[in-house]
Image (cartoon, rainbow over all chains, first blue to last red; front, side, top):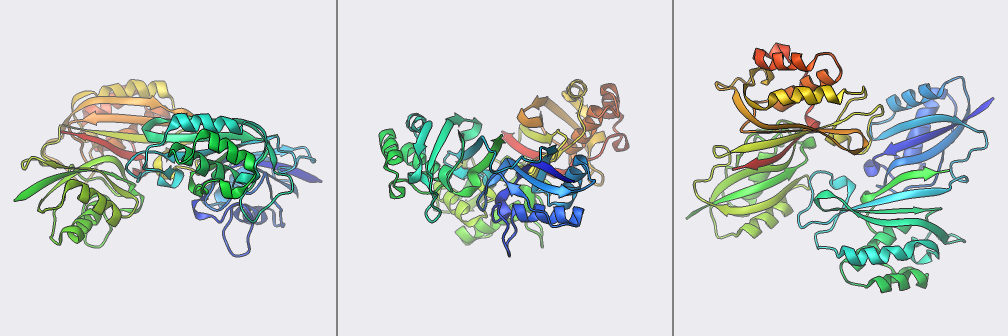
Length: 246
Length: 246
């Protein structure tokens, strides 16, 4: 009988070409599928909650796979963690209902984007934050970020070359959190995200923080549905997929 | 006229064979001296506040060098940061009194040691903490760590093969701080440290946390002046030289 397993995965994306399996490059999905095949002797397809791009990290990516097996969840978790490189960790493995689908059943996803805003670049942790030496106006960013909350057509923040037919998403929460030592964290929860959406939003919010545009301009860009209006795409290494809810 | 410059340095020690210049291996001192030579055209000797071992990190290492130069402090800082790899950052450069000596004039140093204490290993930030899956008894560690404060002969926590004639040190502060997500931080400030002293103390405190020894045993080990009594040396990648006071 086929069993359905749900994995919760943490990874450091620094050395990977993103989530999705590729022929010639190391990817998160590819590495875990390889390990599953080693353990089970069968070809296993791992269904992720969605892709993450090259260099993006995850604290709580979720994926599932179906397999006819006698192996128990603890054995899968232990076995996978011993087969995988230490920059991919299976945090949890659960047996779930046969109908559970890691992508179709998503209720919400939460992303964090970390910025280090201080004059001097970091040596420690530079893999985990976008370094911005010019001081950002946090009050302006705080006003702009609120416009994201609710139902919007996020076409203006969609990556070029990857159009979706439906670009309306529901943003439940969007926050700017000031942490110690000059770290700023954007936290956004939505029912789904377009490709590059968080990074394009962050790039544009940074333009607000640098006073290149006003919070009102940010709102106009959001409503323009025009990618050319938005700012640069923030680099991948500040981005973390934190959690997926079902 | 010779000018004396004081550098404050942050580094990720992961890829270095420690602070001290070596013939064939990359070291922090070696890399900065090379960059200083490139900038000044002269051989420059960089005096650190003390060595850090291979794999140990620093948020606030201090060093000084004397040089006859027209270059200003801002130029040194900018020049060095553009010449150095991104895992070494000059956080500050100041011109100081000719008599300032980064090693002899130390009043205190503060080290932090980070442990991640949770069942599942980390993928993110694994370079910056010692992962311990078994739950530690923090109350026991908290009682043991207090015995460190004051004047003591720390011979029991000195690394083998590197004896000092004077092994008495004055510990001003020793704390255990619980952070979010299972992180524990030991913070120790003293007028000086023996080689491997922090890592040997942490290794022994972890034995207390694992209930292999009691807080009272920890006190006896400290007073024994016998290295064989103490626990394992904690791995280098959890250790950070945070600050040096003069």
